[in-house]
Figure (cartoon, rainbow, N blue to C red):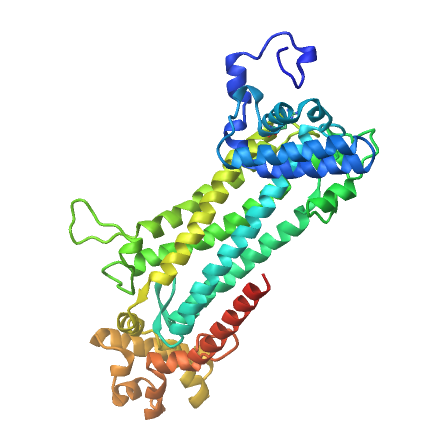
Length: 465
Ligand code: ARG
C-alpha cells in the first residue's frame, strides 16, 4: 500500500519533490500536544454519542497518552513520509493500540483537526504573551515609581520641547502595553470557538456532539458554520496584528534605549548583562539587545503581511496554501516573546543618570512655554501675544548664549516692561514639571500616584491568575 491514510486510490508513492514541498512535520510537530488533546476530546465524544465503543475510546485515550509522552520525552521518531503531525500521531497510535486507532478519524478531517490544533496553540501563545507583557509593565511601573521626580527632556521632533519626568515616560509605555494586552484579549475572545467536527468542509453525517468537544477543549462554543470553521485563519491574523503593534511599541522603546545610552546623551546605563563590546574599539559598549528588539518588529510585521498574502483570494474552503500559515507565525510569536523578555530585562537593568537627564532638560529653552503661560496668567496677555514676547526673549537669550533663567529682570523688561521678579518662579525645570498637574500630566505627584495605581492593578492581576 502506498499510503495507509489514502492508499486506496493511489498506486505509487509521491515523487521526491512532491514530498519535499508537501511535508509539514518538520514544523507542525510543535502542535503535538494540541493535536492529541483534540483527538482525546473527539474520541471521548464519539463514545458518548455511541459512534464508537467505550472500549475503543479507552484504548485510544491510553494510546494517545503514550504517544504524547514519547514525543515529550524525545523518544518519538517523526516520519516525513507521514507528512504532518496528524498522521504521525495516528500512525503511531495504530502501532500502540492496533486497529481501534482507525476509528478515531470518524466524523472529522485533518481540515478541522488542524484548525482546532492551531487555535489551541494560538490561545496558549496569547496567554503567555499576556503574562510577559504584564511583567514588562511591572518593570516599567517600578522604574516609574523610582523616578517619579527624575527630570528629563521631553521631545517633539526629537527637539527639546518641555521637561518631563522619566517616570512619566516609563508610564507612557505601560499604557501602550496595556492596550496591546487588551487587543490580544479581544483576539482571544473572538477566536475561542471550536472548529472540531466541521470535518472536511460540510459537517458530518454522524450524530456528533460538537458542544461536548468544544467544552472539553475549553472553547466557549462550536463554530456555527463548517465552511468558515475550516477555512479562516483570521484568528492568527488578529493575533499577529496585535503582536505587530506590541512589537512596534517595543521597537520605539528600544530605539530610545539606544540613543539614551550614547555618549552624547548618557541618560542611562545598561550593565554587561545586556550589552556587548567591540572587537576593535576597546571603549565600546553596544546596546545589541535593544537593537535586536528594535529589529524584531520587522519580523513580526513581515509575518502579518506574509500570512495576509497567503490568505488573500483563497476560495472556500480549505486549500493547502493554508499550511504555509505556521512557520512564519511560529517565528513571529517566538521572536515577539523573546523581545518582550529582553525588553523587560533591560528595563529592570537600566540605571538612569538623573543629573545628566536634568542638565539636558534645562537645555533648549525648555521652559519657554512656562514663561508664555506666566505672561498669560499674571499679565493677562492673550496667548498669541505671550508667544511672541517669549519668542523675543528666547532670541535674546540665544544671542547671549544664556538660559532663559539667566536673563536679568532688566533685560526681560526691555522686551516687556510689565514683567516682574515673580517670573523666575516658573523658569526652572523643577517648577515646570511640578506645575503639570492636569489629568495625565507629567508632575511628580501625578506620576507617583499613577505608578502606584498600576503596581496595584498588576499585583492584583497576578494574585487572581
Ligand atoms: N498539514 C495540513 C495543514 O497544515 C493539515 C491539513 C491537511 N488537509 C488536507 N486536506 N490536506 O494545513
